[in-house]
Image (cartoon, rainbow, N blue to C red; front, side, top):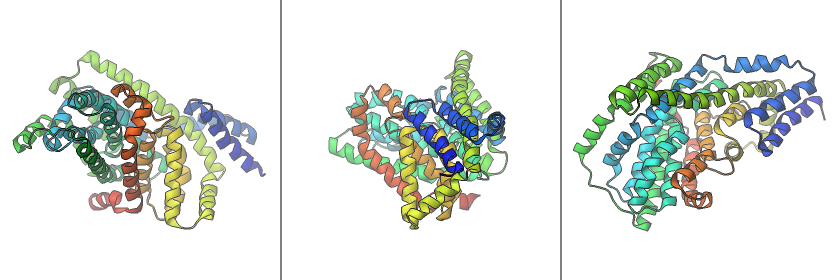
Length: 430
């Protein structure tokens, strides 16, 4: 075995071993990288250099701003208004509260960009409400956690910013636009599944549809929805960068939450900022340590070797695309979202491009793949949050989620094999 192959074995094998031993991902990435550098006889100063380089990016400054915006809006009384708006739109259907849950997640996702925040915020309101109206608790929780993945696709999403930075040269504005239709497609597919189950179990309908009520709730929710317009229109229109738009959105969300909706006082603002610091510290540590890992992957030519290995298995583009999705789904079962994006993008993006998948389409595929991973044991963080919020055992929740898993996989396949789902909107507006 050549020295390079031994180094690759130390790097990737050591990382997987430490993940299996339940090391924190950031430590697993850093330690395996250090052992590889020692084996290669390279100076350990590279560790510090690459960690600093990894987070010294102007575009990455958008990440803390988007996280702060999501926390402020999520704790500032926004959830109730978005649920009321969703109820006015789809609450009249059979299983109306399930439909409201799914549509509210689409709206809230455009503000928080976090599946975990969506599940905690929307779920804490919707799950008890649905159970009180006669819905099964496991069904209510399954709808909540699966629909929360819409928020990963609907901009602004800090995970899209992380992917754009990792992929290099990918337009954040194009990624934002690319997420709208896949997010809507996911919402529609989940609504179809929820409707079929609701008819079968004879879940109740809501009040009759009223256009006056829709207008009333739309006016009430205007200030919340305007935050998304500020970010997306500003970035797509070239008025300001993603980082600048995120900073403006933080100031806007602070004003809306404290002075307009009055869901937060200044004490609550400080608590929200503490939560942001906790989340951000985890994200930045992952980004900085993954930078060392990515540096070693590049110097050891792992992306090229991985691409050649996959192409040697088959030259059928359909099978290669399916294999890429399978790899990402398996990674999602054992790793969290951000580290998968940081580690797998340099390896799998060249493979995807070799079969004609654009970086933007691949980004949407990766986001949805890793989103599904958030719902799968043993590491599915959103699955555990949903179980805690809904007071449902993991076993019952996984069983209730199975039909929705299938619908999410169908949506993923449509995104993979119908490029227009993700690329049409950016091609028209960018």
